[in-house]
Amino acid sequence: MTILLDIATLALLLLVLTFVPALGLRHDAKIDRQIREAQAARSAAERHGADR
Image 1 (tube, rainbow, N blue to C red):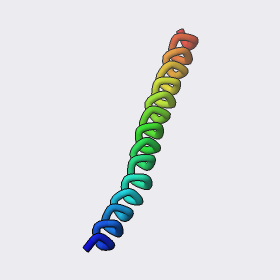
Image 2: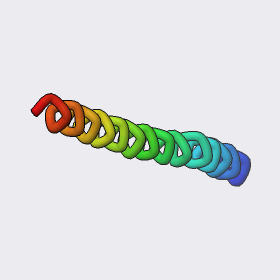
Image 3: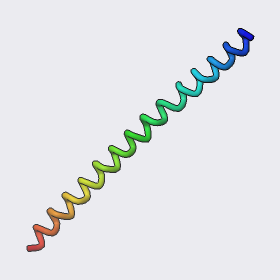
Image 4: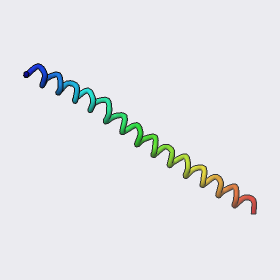
């Protein structure tokens, strides 16, 4: 019984150690996308202002 609990604990630990960093990478990608969108909007506004 103890061996099964050890295996289950190790499986859970492996899941946590692989899943949690993946969530962090998704969050970083979201922030990067928001930064790119803001930069694109700013450059579009600057181009629009230069056209006048």
